[in-house]
Image 1 (cartoon, one colour):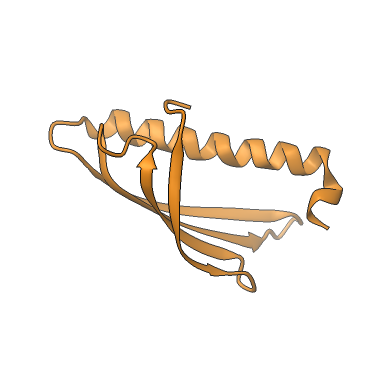
Image 2 (tube, rainbow, N blue to C red):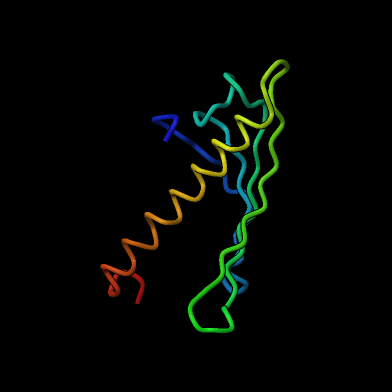
Amino acid sequence: MPFSVMKERLEFLDAEKCECKSTLIEGGGIGTAIETATSHIKVEPAASGGSLVKVDSTYKLLPGVEVNDEITKAKESVTAIFKAAEAYLIANPDAYN
């Protein structure tokens, strides 16, 4: 990750619909490259079995920050978080039952 700490505020959680929305409040580039960041995450059943995770993130960059570099870093970070969670859950199936 391009940062060591990230703190988010949970805006809402709907366990039945498997979705949540959070706002980044500390770390993760806040104050250095990003002014604000929110993520809406929804998990849906996949047609082939398993799940499909949809992430809609909105970023407001600080003035003078290159859009392409920061968006690419953010996408890579979110993808890495989900891949790590997926690997853990596959290796530890009793963790979510």
